[in-house]
Image (cartoon, rainbow, N blue to C red; front, side, top):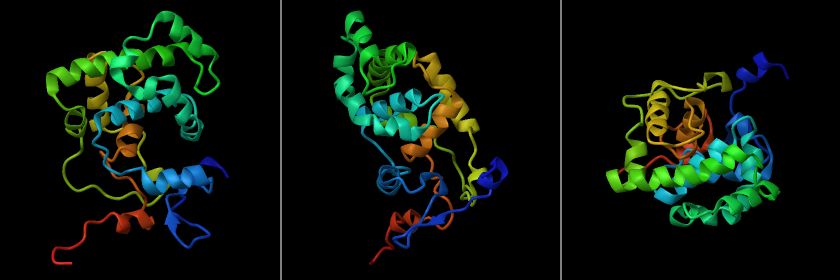
Length: 208
């Protein structure tokens, strides 16, 4: 399928009869991630740190590649406990270059430790990582994407998040990475029109 055809892809109907965003395809792991995680507001600070680091690991790769390695990342990086991460020695970080459970890129490995340090400083200053990140959420009504081509690679809000995270010492937080992160953790909801999750996550009306 050529690039133009891909941009015109709307939600796809799966064998179970449910319509889902076209990007998740039919891989069972990807479908579960789409159905239960992507776009759901995440307010746990350490899990947000994990997702930010994983989105950075995705740079130059596909998200499914990193998703398949998520448990490997949790094992390699102390379940993303920032207090433990900042104590990773140079020797321990070097050993991770031989760990097949993660993306073996030196700069990406180093970025996890640097991000943990920046995270702890930000938490001390702001109190809540979640409140800080969700402060970059767009305001006003947004048009729900109908086609894959309607999904922007970056936005003014992700530009602002990227600038501020970089200023604070975070790494692998370019605007495109930040927008993918915002989509993943529910700072924005970019499920395509017709996707079944839209109705399933809509708050029930009062009195019901």
